[in-house]
Amino acid sequence: MQGLRDNLVEIADGLLTDDLELVEHGATGVATHPRIPPEQVQLVARELGEEMPAFKQFDMRVHDLALEIAAAARASDKTAAIGRFQGMIDGCFGCHIAYKDRVANALRVGK
Image (cartoon, rainbow, N blue to C red):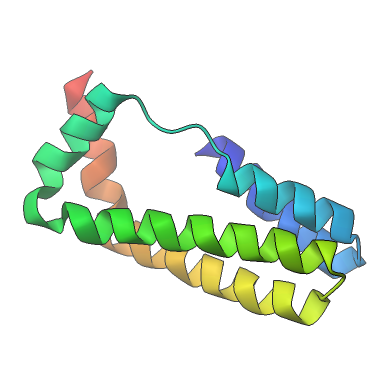
């Protein structure tokens, strides 16, 4: 998660300083972040049960928005990048509000 935070900061910094290469770099980092190991996925799935598809939907939404942000940055469309970034942040916070504590606890207990 630390790497994703760093990537989000890169996107925000790039947008604030008109550095669209930095925006693209951060967005690409989000889109290509390493997946968690299968055994951790199983722990999370066990904890979330029927909520797992909704949890996965948050991940896919953030991933797709990261790709759109990178494309907007490459196209020098700062307005589109900002809009997608706002959507990404909404997705991150939505997921964290709904699942962060439960997922962190499941992973901590599963060690």
